[in-house]
Image (tube, rainbow, N blue to C red; front, side):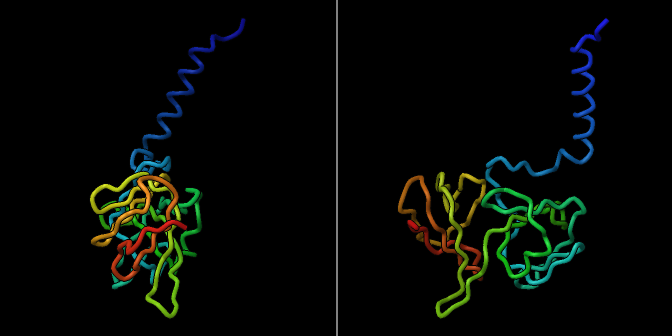
Length: 167
């Protein structure tokens, strides 16, 4: 006699849910929902125990840190973020997630970080992108489009977008 599939499905679902509730309740869902960072800046020092951003701001690191690229939401190695502009989500004083925004470009002009993405909307002084990235706008910054593909030019020292332009 074949076992009834419903009880097996219920048992599998219960096991799956039980496995997700231990630490999964505070995991970041990477599905395009807006991610407002708790802090952001250029990574000066990084280890499995601590991340230090520009200005000497240091944070401990959770053992289950989620480190990912904003562009494709794929996992990226955390230790390779040194010198890059990142968004951090905190759980108390520890980093729970780190989103790699971009490289700091040094040159003749002021340093800049370029971020390319599909702008969904402006919400006050924030730009919300389709991948979930949320960037803070400097005073007076407007978008050349209501929605669509734009390039954000971030000032890494002010942690603000100084321009939204068409690429």
